[in-house]
Length: 112
Length: 425
Image (cartoon, rainbow over all chains, first blue to last red):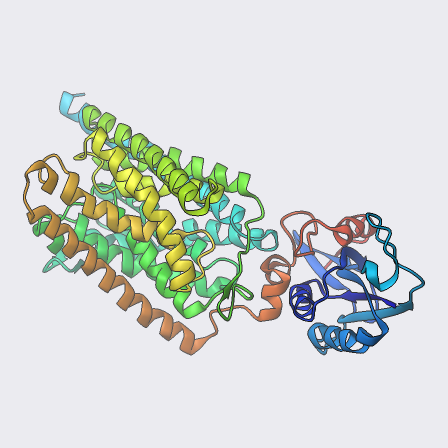
């Protein structure tokens, strides 16, 4: 089992979600996050004054997949979330020790 | 002061106060459009509405009024006294009509929201207030208009104002295309409005302003007529709400909030052509039908025609503008079919509806095709996704709302981190 944590552009999420549903991923967690990487911040203007926006809004998608599905899921994320410009985000992958479904007590892939 | 003098001053006072009420409807339009769209485009919508009333009234002052009420060329259009020069005695009529012209133009604003380029939108506003609205208005409201001579009646503008704006919107939306993500093959995605309470406030403001819109169209201190008009306006708007609420309950098994708000506007547009000649009971029937029509039309325009109209402007102002105009031919107590008036009024109304439809669709298509040959009328996909507020105006409506999902973490942290960092250009 692997845990995938992808930091992506907010606007790419709906397409990623659609693709993940298509391949049968039936659970994930999404949060709004803020941060910066190699993408530069933005400059805004308000009543004639410019201001810097250093932290950019991103979406963090967390999901757990079996070792067998891992490569295809990474491919989907790379595919749907890439625009080719700085700011597309990153994917972090962790080995996962266990998953437990609270309601039934199922463990491992059973609980996904 | 003679009695005649006093009466003519009272007539003008009615026009003045009514014009103020119609002016306030622009606040209503702004709030409806903002409420029914995404938070990332709210500033852009406000700018469009501010510029519509400003650019629209000045263009109408410069050219529009003279085309609408100038000396008629065979009932088609006028053209004299540009900038009201030499026509100062009509300045009060100009005031009342200018806010109507801007209303007609601003109907387009909601339909094209969230993706049109500001400059292209303003070009459309100028064209609406200088050519499209004045020519249509000349046909239906000037003494020499060819539709007036045919017996066509449109008291406060179901067709003159509302249909004209809506047909302009149909053409603009057709050439502009839908918002990104709205239509995905055969799937139709809902893009929910971000602040329905604000949208509902907008509808109330419009309804309030509508009393001026309709009663002021008496164009005189005619108190009995104005009371009748105010009552039919109230009843038809109310019936529109009820019609939409009940029909959404039947159709969708739930009372749909934003469609019910739209229902009020549908009922109001529906009564606007004949508030003086339709009885109070007739007004309720007209409004009920308008509310049902609204729900049917929104779904038809969205799902079948695939015209992406975020605020339902085409259904509210176009479909119900037609309904209201035809309703005069059916429900007018003087000339309507249901009151033994025969078919002549109904036929005149239908001719008017079709003539205006053809005129606006043709003229606006030519104009937008010309515009498209010069420049792209749509903003870039990147700007659209990010939201027009930041991409086009460098700022946001809700203190740094950069996230398209709402006021998120990044927004809150950026508010903190930016303090003390602003610097002058």
